[in-house]
Length: 205
Image (tube, rainbow, N blue to C red; front, side):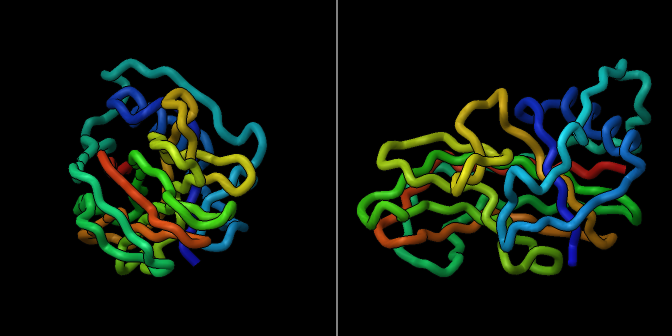
């Protein structure tokens, strides 16, 4: 089983990537398996396991923390599929050296139109060799447009609305080229609608 961890913090920036590097070093590079099935939940990370640290830019070897790559997919798309479908990305490909980690951050405008009270619009993270099942990383049951971002959710909600509570997914992958993408589905009926989809991927190590 591939091991994934979520770190909480501010929306991605060069300073945030530096903080992630410091955190990984502080935790000794360990990771734990998630209890949630095909999803990332708030109890998948131990209490007080995440700490922040400030470092001067000169304190970090630039060859250890690669620049973040970002991709965006504009325009509105929708689906009535319960199965995970490709609605045009976004897609990001990175080259991962041996022993490195990959940090993932995503956001999208989303809503669910119609369906029952349990209807959800869902965003999945897919990498065909590492996470082919496409775990849910964001979802919303709102009938109005919400901008949701990757972060631990409350109850059945995955991701958060507020940028100050958003965070990264950090995962171990095999060395080589890896193409990450966002895919989509709906749950509980109705039509899931998405817009302004963005994906950040950073290689750490």
